[in-house]
Figure 1 (cartoon, helix red, strand yellow):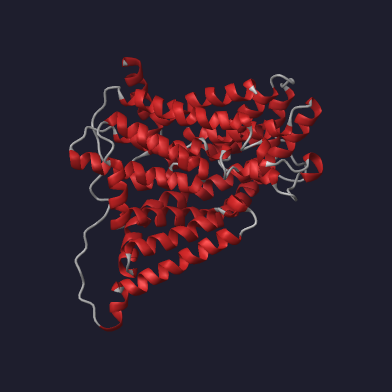
Figure 2 (tube, rainbow, N blue to C red):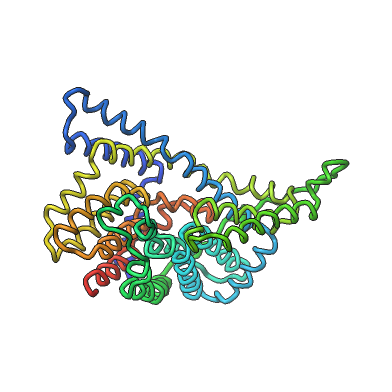
Length: 444
């Protein structure tokens, strides 16, 4: 136990803030590109890297807005009275720190397998509400651990029904169709090996969370500033529309009806559930749950401060992606692992290379588009099953989300914690997940 406590203190001491990590990774990636990529005789090497960085910075602006909306709307839903009461009732089963750890981990993992965006927001909201319930009832709680449990959804998502790589190769006209054809999800997401992986994580991650909950800890809870109390204003004339439950609820229901009609009509099934459709659903749920436009606007105002990390840091990571993609550094990384691979070791090195690249390029879809062709070519030359190659990349990509605070920003905004609070626990979850996924790759 002393070793674990020493590890926790060490991680918190040496870990910089997420913004500092993004800046340091930018500089580190630029240095790697300078040292290991082929120079262009017609262009200064440093300027080539700077241009690549500049190109990348602006490539995720749409994605940045999508993630900010997801955070603000999800946070606003958590601030609504009916949703808050519902989650509070669910949280009532958490009568000890151990119960809370198991409860939050299990439902975060389930939500993550269904959809990564909903899993991330749901896990964050659930952790927050469990923390508030524990504070209200006087239950001794390790709140950073509970928040880390809510983040486990991002360690399982790529093997779930929103996994970028498996869904991409299952489409009829994906970019690598001529090389590998169409790979159905029955060979990837719904394969026997991945179902075993799902079952293993659903059992082992909550069990591990329970073990972590038993170590000594300093009790902690969410801050009491999650929602500010507001004085009721006296509204007259047209201002009364802001408080109209009829107008607010009706408008929210319009969103929900359109969403469900689109879902029923969609030919792609679960493929319909993407970032835009999630945000559309969250918009409808948030407005309907608050009942009036005024309450919804107030909740959004409270929630939006938590999205500043996304606004500032996502462009920096997009710039890192630009350096990796436009200088050829990503190919250098992938080719290095392929060159040292054999038929037996290829799944491991494909998995490891994906895990390493994800630290620098935390985007599953973008990673497949750039790294996928390289892995496909190598897998074909070694006669490795293509579905296994796809899942090796997916497992590696999702694993190091527990180390990379990029995706933790929405959760940190909702829980009110810092990255150094949850990463000591999420790294331990990563080590367990690494063992699970590596075992699956070699057992099947």
